[in-house]
Image 1: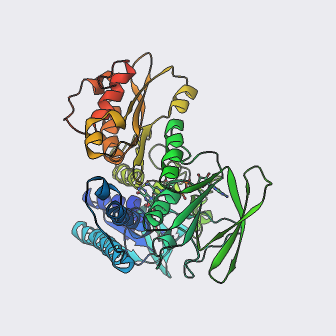
Image 2: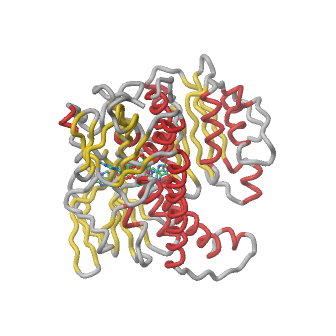
Image 3: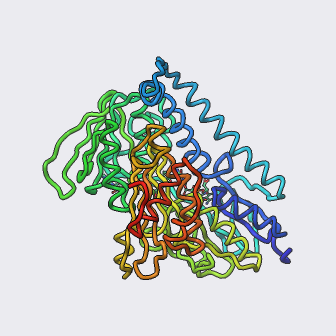
Amino acid sequence: MAENYDYDVLVIGAGPGGYVAAIRAAQLGLKTACVESRETLGGTCLNVGCIPSKALLHGSELFEEAEGGHFATWGITAKPKLDLTKMMAEKTKAVGELTGGIEFLFKKNKVTWIKGHAAFEDAHTVDVGGEKVTAKDIIIATGSSVTPLPGVEVDNDKKLIVDSTGALELEEVPEHLVVIGGGVIGLELGSVWRRLGAKVTVVEFLDKLLPGMDDDVRKEAGKIFKKQGMELMLGHKVTGASTRGKTVTLTVEKAAGGDEQKIKASHVLVSIGRRPNTDGLALDKIGIETNKRGQIEIDHDFRTKVDGVWAIGDCVPGPMLAHKAEDEGIACAENVAGQTGIINHDVIPGVVYTMPEFADVGMTEAEAKEAGHTVKVGKFPMMANSRAKANRDTDGFVKVVADADTDRVLGVHIVASLAGTMIAQAAQAMEFGATSEDIAYTCHAHPTHAEALKEAAMAVQGKPIHM
Ligand code: FAD
Ligand code: NAI
């Protein structure tokens, strides 16, 4: 162990970035501690993010299928009755099992869990509730929290105007849920409550849902969510809210301003993005300033500008995704230990876990063109995929974007019930530098949804078989 320090490595924050970094550092023989201000380990993802949202997406999907979705298609009549308390309890159980699992992993790997809020004293010392803890290296993994919307104050206790955390804990199905922001959270949690019986209106500032995704995917998302019964107010913004009794009245305007109108809602979800958690770390004491998005700038190795201080996950630039944070955690810990930890930020998949799912990896068609590539695109509809057809779940398509000169795959975009699983193959192929031909000539099991990726890759050459 490094002399004169309590620990070799101290990680601040026990989310997917921090807890993974701590475990890897300990695996590499470093004496490691992790400070967490929450009661349980696992960060946003396990406590109030990925896991509870996916649990409710699963439960609500079963309900919708039974209520008239695919059950009816397949001649099965069911009259499901919702016990929301039980559904919520099952979600809480899943969260408890997983956060408890991290506690077990900390013990197994001899990571010390320090409970409390950490703030820097100097580059090798943090204060946790009056105690000074020192380490040779400190990794900041403090994550992110909800971006507030001025004029629309979130109060998760009252459960009328909520953020994602509140929307995971509602005690009744909203009569009319207005979702502010048609991004990932709005569509996932909006879907949960729509499936359980709420009328859902999505107010989105831009002219399409899911910013950042490929334009074809965004257009498809608009059609699909509309077909599912969501009311979409694209190109609109919410400028204020007032509450009377149990009704919230929202003031909505066109994005460019003007055309003010009022919408009444029983519940409102504010989901307009997240911002890094850096306040309260006393970064000024070590001379770190955040950039204009509030993020901590790092170099390729996750080093901040201060020697011995590193940063990963949602509090640094890049997509705010759990798997990106985890991979950065591993790579950063390896670098701290003197190894060479690398992650390829060009190949980070993203998935929206609605039904169908929306998944992508690499560049959108527009980004590829902007980056100077001449592109070739192959598209294959799920309607022509035999397994999707057999399952009667034919929404969506696969789109492969390849470089016209080298045939190298630059991006893959999938809308399909299993898109989140299918995208892993695309990510791995891209990581190995695959061409569209490599994917097209890889034998895929039949009948599987994954064959649609093979066909889309064949379509890049203009020769799909089933279309
Ligand atoms: P976090 O998970 O935010 O963890 C940071 C931890 O640091 C927190 O527990 C915090 O309490 C602690 N902390 C902060 N400051 C201090 C301090 N000074 N001292 C001590 N502790 C501190 N991503 C996906 O990839 N897939 C999904 O399906 C997905 N679903 C999501 C659903 C929702 C509703 C939300 C909100 C997010 C979702 N995300 C998802 C995003 C994902 O949760 C984040 O990208 C991920 O948690 C980031 O990990 P992190 O370790 O950087 O930070
Ligand atoms: P987001 O950035 O995905 O979407 C926010 C949306 O709100 C955007 O479409 C934006 O145009 C819109 N918006 C902003 N201001 C507005 C206003 N005043 N009125 C109307 N619309 C407005 O952010 P979101 O959904 O809050 O999610 C935050 C982060 O959490 C995302 O970056 C995502 O990476 C992560 N996340 C990931 C999930 C996954 O991987 N499945 C699930 C949930 C969250």
